[in-house]
Image 1 (cartoon, helix red, strand yellow):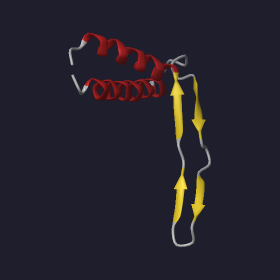
Image 2 (cartoon, rainbow, N blue to C red):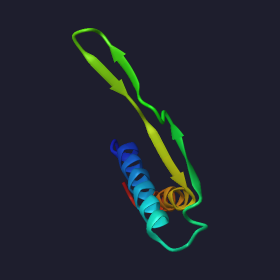
Image 3 (tube, rainbow, N blue to C red):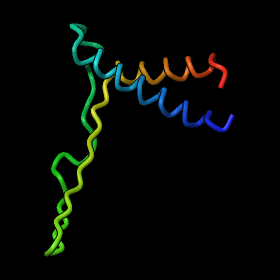
Length: 80
């Protein structure tokens, strides 16, 4: 019972990844409709002796959202 949240997290991530792959590589234009959100150009922090570069983007499309919804439905029916 203590792994319930971890299982849900991994199912959602897997559903999102598979949905995005299907949406990008299928010939159906409706599934690939979406956008990119986040830091498109990286933020750089220069400390003189250390340079840190931060960047994070999310490519969200309809198929990825459907993958997340299917992951929640699958989680509802599995016994964890």
